[in-house]
Image (tube, rainbow over all chains, first blue to last red; front, side, top):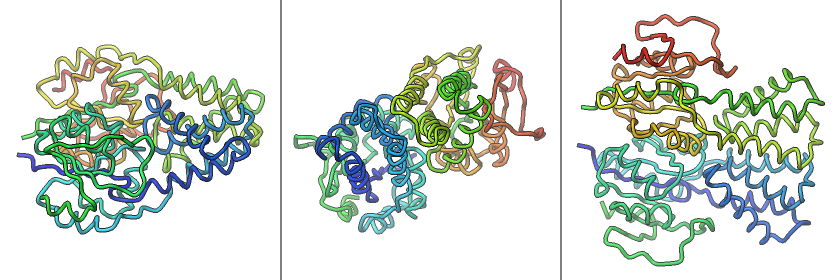
Length: 227
Length: 227
């Protein structure tokens, strides 16, 4: 029988991520500050990101291409090659950021290991997420990493079929109510929310969740008390 | 006990792919025909693709970004925004190509299904490969799709650990000796090669394989005789 599975989201659950994206967007806004306000530029990037999701999916390469789309629109296609190079460099820098674990992550994994099958379940660039798990040093705690093309009900359903486990034996832990909790509750699994201090606009929801399989924690330490 | 697993490469094993990339590169060469010969441009793209592999991995988004790198170099960063847009469009068109199954693929899957656990094991863009499997109509024959960040020994080892199967019970079928056969033989699995009429330069090897776990077939029909 397959052990019960606990899956952890990666970005902003195991390690810091969103601040790197914020910093990247700051750099982009500075490049094009003569074309629009920071707020307008951030909105434009988000618009292109969401528009591009069906084709590009999530991750830094998609983000880079969405920044290029935004720059083409901002400059009415008058952007220079040098400007394009600077955008590509922003993307490449993101792909080489150090991986900084969040507090207490390793201690929690240490306590859970052996008792459950631990998995990383994340969106993003395939190569990049594998790289980050490797660089994080916590790879050995996990049975494997699932890089998901999206985190909707159907994506979790497919993952559980692949893992050959019942939803009731599956718990997902993450910082996004929209991606880590709601779809998992929808398909009969358990969802644990641990907030991160900043959330990508796309991941925000504007309602409360009450569900018997849902737990809202304040920090990852509290996970240990639940298992 | 886990059933024996047969994994199929996707691009140019289950469906046509390389001709779409060739066509995309033709379009790129035409855009920049005043800067260099076709042969020089193709070499330049390949150079950027290989250079970018450690950061970007495989797939169409990586290819698009490598085309942009190539264009920046070819034009000495003098490329126009319109030129960048045309490159992005080449990439976007690639992501929306119809999926054309190779001959006899479905018949072979029909004969194998139920007797083995059938898996797709492919490199490329996560989202794009999921899309292609869906659009192909042959998704239901497979237990799941593994989109791998690379196809080296270590990547197959990780995949087999994840699938909890011994290498001896694993067979990989594909058109690339370098990516689908050699690493699988190296880790103790079985490799079957089915050539496609054209091969990406990066996937070529210049030696013969002789190994007791290796079979070279002429077409996918012959797979059925082996199982």
